[in-house]
Length: 351
Ligand code: GAL
Image (cartoon, rainbow, N blue to C red; front, side, top):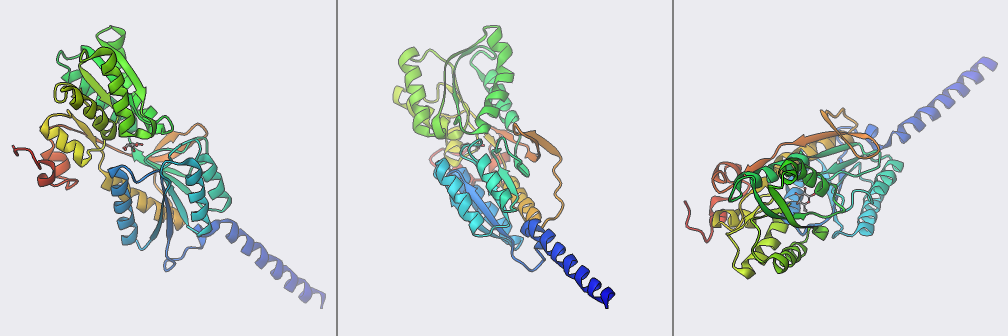
């Protein structure tokens, strides 16, 4: 008698333990093939063209993989982005993909997600000081190096000149990585006194109008006594060029950029912007969606690089970027189908 009771008791205890283990493992381990993966995509903003493209390409690839995507955009508001993440967790997403407005403020969101057993991927911009699961982006320091190298090589007197620098948003870790790459290239020229930074500032929230104000202030102080504007992305380049246009300096000053936005590509073929950095968003969005589905299903993820976020070395997948000028725009952005030739050359006598 006693032995039989004992056996029943032991098997009860065992099944309870098993049940508990699975639950803590979160949804990832419970996902079988036919359960639809639900991805929560939390964006900083949809104000810039690139984020709309990222969203569309990401949702498309996720759909091809049988996954559903719930999209939230925080309009560059940190409290709103944290509550967006809360909402997505409440909606039982299996994995979170986040483009943080503020890389530090969103550490809280990573903790909230982990408490709910949901893994987190930082998309394009890293989330700092947290146990982030994965980071997918481009080599952002290299972006800055390529912008500054182009400027150094194309100043009226190569390697010499007076420049204005427009950095991105201070809340965006990428803005610091772009600056780091630019600094690496410029430093020896600045040390020798060959290149002088006459004016520099950060454009809050990467806003075009904030970049314009920076260049307006520089022109008030120095009129046209400068050679180039090292703008960190196409949005800030657009603001800078508006300020130049007002003074009749557009097309006469070298201006850098990033993102290969359509308006920037048009400015490049028209001659008011000198270059941009093309970041193949299809590669990033496709990889992001594929890694998100894998994480949601608890499948192994291969990330060959790491990026330190102030707390851990986050496994990372960083993609390469391309310098785009009037000379190679057809072979890069257009050949890739990122923009059509018709759109880029609209209003310009095609070559
Ligand atoms: C950065 C991003 C850039 C640029 C900028 C403004 O984080 O890497 O591509 O778009 O944000 O949104």
